[in-house]
Image (cartoon, rainbow, N blue to C red; front, top):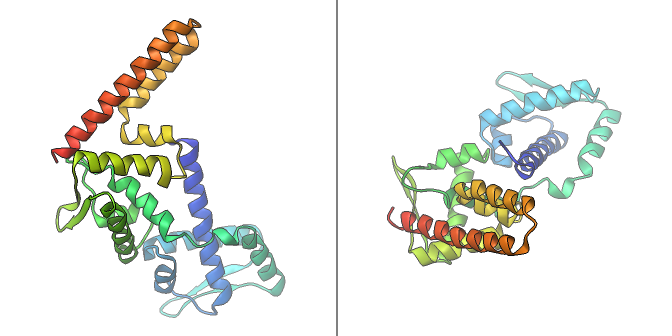
Length: 245
């Protein structure tokens, strides 16, 4: 089940992409799927799906329609008043229209840092997850390589196998700590830890329920000490497993 932050992230991404597409229609007389895909960084299949959703929204709010002509292109059919309303609709969050290279890199690193022997990841998988075209994804992967290099981690894209990481236990621990506590601003530290160590979430719930149920400060302190001890053990174990990949 998705948490609130994940749902908000999906919602924000959908709004950003819809606004980018609408803005492109407002500034171009004729548009093709390929032009939109290259401009925005999504696959042509995803662009078609989003255009259908946008067209439905436009019709429902009497803001015009997106017309299509086979082998020619698409255009926004609307009058001056409707055009002004569309521009007003997207102007409120215009500063958020362009998804930065950094935000794409952060999202990609979240998936890449979770790669292990049981969970493979290809460039296409990553592109589909982030709603990007493969060429755009390759640029993002290049940015990820530069970031990982700062921690002496090597990212390899191996044909027919996918993305693999080469690192020492220390380098991975430092990179993951930096990612969770500094780079990933969209998720709390708690969300970051439980994402990379999903088994810890069950343990946390059990301990916090005991803390809430028992008002004895001594027992609470003991439980907290146990929590931190087990957390360190789990984290170390995870790093040992990853270092053998």
